[in-house]
Amino acid sequence: MRVPVRWVLWDIKDTLLKVRRSVGEQYCNEAMRSGLKIPAIKIETAFREAYRNRSHLYPNYGIAQGMNGQLWWTGLVKTTFLQCGVQDPALLDTLANNLYHSFSGPENWEVFPDSNSTLKSCTALGMKQGVVSNFDRRLEGILQGCGLRSHFSFLLTSEEAGVAKPDPNIFVQALKKSGVPAKHIVHVGDHYKNDYLASRSLGIRGYLLDRQGLQKHPDVPPQHQLQSLNELPERLLQDTD
Image (cartoon, rainbow, N blue to C red):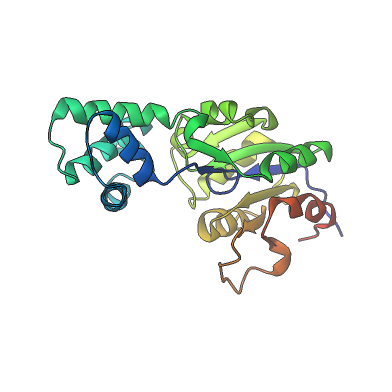
């Protein structure tokens, strides 16, 4: 028996939006504005190492340790450039603050071509929509600037929730916001563990977005896989899970 879908919950990064250029390129451009010449690949390597270490020491923007998204990110930027040989504290502050704010709007983000049309189709089908994302407080401004904010009844970021996917508690909070049982809700995201497994653990109907067709998960049946968001509206009409 088919159970109608009443809500669609969305992941954001690499599902509806992606960074416009690599982190190395964007950090390199900011460094050049301050008179520094550091190869993008060097910055990219330093960033990845710093991000990995900081995420391990201070998960979910360090909320549990009394931090917030801005402190977490500016600290990460400073560590990245320190590893690239930048020592001047004032210059590190400038780079960190400029980069934090430059990622707060649409200029460094790109909307996937199938995002807007799919969001509009879901609304046309009578479904409400929300966001469940491991993101910080900048998300609302980014979605506003990218023309997507109006599609969503609520945004739930991991910074606001105090927990990050795959912790099921963030989905528990989303269920409360939606006000309907999990069986009437779909979640769409690109991460097998954070999005697909975490949502389905609570009875939400998860879809795994794999734009490149590179993910291999035998436990994800074909009807739960998407290579394009354009496939979603028809799936929602047919979905019996």
